[in-house]
Length: 355
Image (cartoon, rainbow, N blue to C red; front, side, top):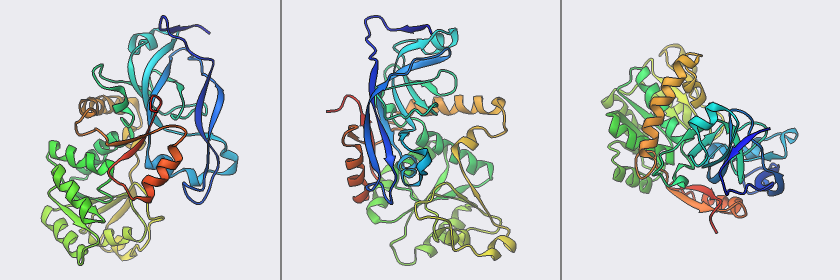
């Protein structure tokens, strides 16, 4: 198989990556190990080989660690990351669009690969996104899941004709991005958080409407905000029994869109809200939004427009992320500390140049 690589660049035969060998009841209980002597993958036509600079540990990543079946293990971990193209499979499309030396973000790896690896191969047309040349490449470690979800949620809210919408777990990295993006887009968000310090942080980012669930009568406050801003949809990352409470607060014909399950399965649903008040419960998934319409005719323009917005904000802008850096060796330990500290302000990032 023929490849094109950078002159004077030595690509090793073996590499390291992070894998999960055994699941557990919590992130701390999972058996996470570094696998060594893994063959560095070779790019096939229309693929590129990427030397990974950094990769984010998203809630959607570690949220799945406790749910893997035994027959799925061991499994390489990580869903998105960034780095530099160091070789391409010999094809015009790969070498033209993503030449050696190009800074890139990647997502949607195949063939059992994970982003927490020193090298990955990925499709030049489906999985790799060119990054601006002046962007510090480590800033693109979380270029996809959160920023594109923020754009997808705002676009979906508009599609329902809602003048404003409710968002739970709003102090998350995604929630912070949405506050900044909504300000640019002229969209009103009613941000729901647990603690006053989280509300303070969002207000400093420009949030005008924040409801704190630790406060007495928070449901009345949220209901008043919903009525005032004529919000008809709610995007819920928490679920649990709170899903039913949110559904009750929405107006007739309102829609609850669940996109996470931090508190477990959705509960507390009053069937009368669905039957007599014509409310709806559905889900939101980024990949479904990208592929809306079922053909490339819809998804390609959508991705191009979203990509332009995302890339412009990755370095200090709306789509930038506050990271805490770690290594392969300390990733699980640092993640447990971050989660036990209830730190919603930062996301863990594995750096391959971090000591």
